[in-house]
Image 1: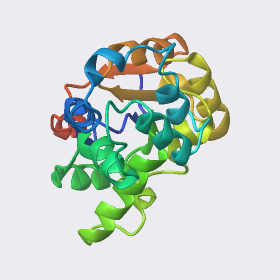
Image 2: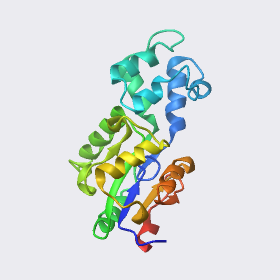
Image 3: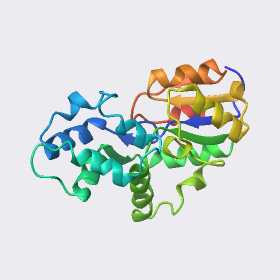
Length: 207
């Protein structure tokens, strides 16, 4: 492994504990449909990817979910609650690991995420009196798909991050819980590490 100067983290499943099935189950119950069956139908339900890339507003996203309902149209707040059900919260020890890593490396986030989930993150951290600004733990910008207009595993999102941040790919370690998202990063020269979803990150203190 080359000398590491930057650690680039995926967010959900690496730093924030995540269980997507909870959201899909909640949406299935709320809408009276099998959301598991339709969630990967990219042609018919393209709005899911569009929302992750910031191409549509939260209002349009919620409307697209409402129109799937087989029966009474659910209220927006109930849709938001179901959508956010996948966000499990935090292993607080990870914050201490991040603080230690920040003394040795540039640390950043590159995440496929959306405005509703990041709003939840910011509210949850403030409510628990941990951080008024999550970004304080990191170097520079947090790179979110909905703000960049790009999404993993496209190679373009990695090229844009490199351009904006000035990181050197060969000295960057990318921590990701989805194997296909490592491929474009590694093709650009980054070192990749597949993380087991929701596991501890203490092992990074040993690199």
